[in-house]
Image 1 (cartoon, helix red, strand yellow):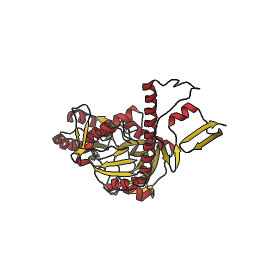
Image 2: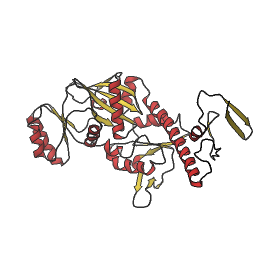
Image 3: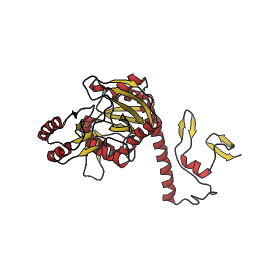
Image 4: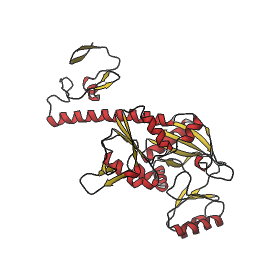
Length: 361
């Protein structure tokens, strides 16, 4: 199988790239900055270094919010025929804190109270009503950047005056006192692969490792794990980081990150997160390819109108390639549906050069 990691070349991306090489036959390192997308024709045209992007069985695309439109465009072009752990629209949702909050709201995922305002005047009216301290943050930003802490109405008003000159949208969010700590959980598929509690340094409200925060390994309870997994699902990502606050009301999600750093959590938990990501990509790509083969076989029968197709007792002929796994032959999924074999049933297998038959005993 052939895979590609499309990224900005961070250390975390390099860790994942090396791990993927242990599972896939071929892995290409694609620099996101050298990608081009051409729209307006019958199909989306994608170019890398000025040439059409090759065909891959798996593409793991990731990058910062600045590249969200490009990431969405590229993944849209390949999503139907290539396994990708992050849906195209996730790059729009996950890289915009406002859209992320809306997704959390829709899926009933607990989060701090958040206000969206249309103007500085409207914001100041909200500031007169909220309890302090509060958080003011921009919709875009990573590693805790663009997040401001206001202890009073006066401090918040001064921040708004400065924000007004930037002409950027912003959010006002309830501040929850956790003594400068939060939880980061790495979600892979339907599981939390690793988690740590981060503690901010003295004088800092952000617990991010990049902001100087310190981490310690933590095992999450099942309720918190479920919240983390559901957060990833709400934005359409099978691989992402979820940041959670521990509050008296229970876990509350404050952010989802589609391109999380792996060095910190790997060092803290001693879990090889990059390897877990690579293995997950390999397994899901196999499933995606097998599903594609079954769909093609089903379509073939429908197109040619094969006699007896769909009837329980009719013998059916399937033309396909053999899929070898460690010198074992894996039959197409449609065979299970046609034969109705069960795992506990005994069978008679007859084999000779160029021919195999399997019958119930």
